[in-house]
Image (cartoon, rainbow, N blue to C red):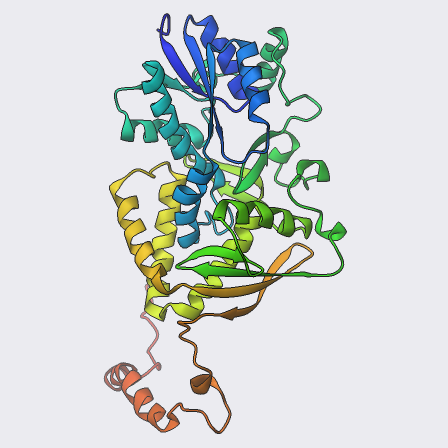
Length: 408
């Protein structure tokens, strides 16, 4: 099926995609490796050399950090996108961009197929396949690990047999995915939901117990829903995220341990590290409480949930997602201000917030005698507000209801 075909593979340098290069070559295909730098922290030159050594016809390297942050992470910040209320979707946000770049690379080299290293149990297979179908339905998607039906121990044996260097070993069996917005760790002993992760699992965050005994205060300045300053200094968003990862991670902020409902129908135990993501979303949500009306906040919460689901489910390039983006962007026009957070022993706690368009008015809220709130108007408001309840009670006898008749 692949004999003589050019195939562009999304290449990370890890176990799955490394064995994919060799497998595609053995099928008679001409594999091209595409490495997209989304802030993984691994030298791109090393990854390229590794792909070529394994058997790739060429290894294409693209720095997509700024595009990733500005076009994928930024909308997610505005949407407070946390799947299951915890996971900031960093892997899910990266996949549509990788798929888009795979399509571009396929056009560049004249490939008819693109490939990824996703398994048949994960969400990424859906994200890659559906995104490709959304933007380039003429291309064929190949998923060697899924189609080959190889377990991780079998992959490791294959890698050893063919001299493929991979970071995964029997002693360290974790599957890791990382970009600028976060890091995931799974497999091995972590598959037991009752197993407490050991410290060797984590890289971006200090153990809360070992974090500094003195708190660190940070101040995030937002303009129309996006952070633009850190402690009063202006930053490009990509740099702000990188620095905040270091600052918050040093104080143990950003660890997530959750049971996640995967799109394919199974529950999985997931360990994440996302210091900057959780800090920024916490601050952004707080600023919205100061600048958005109650009805917008309530309605936006429902939109956020659906937005998060669409992102998680690989439906980034769809009409509904575009429509929700438009609504969310409209809500962010007044979300400008500053949020101060206290980072301490694994927690990022909001301790202050200000905004030029704050809807909070101290003169109205204060209990001091000089309050401008007209308390005399309260009695009439309550009478009208409670009118439906009083009318119901007068017609139906209040809450003194007769017991339901017995069925016996």
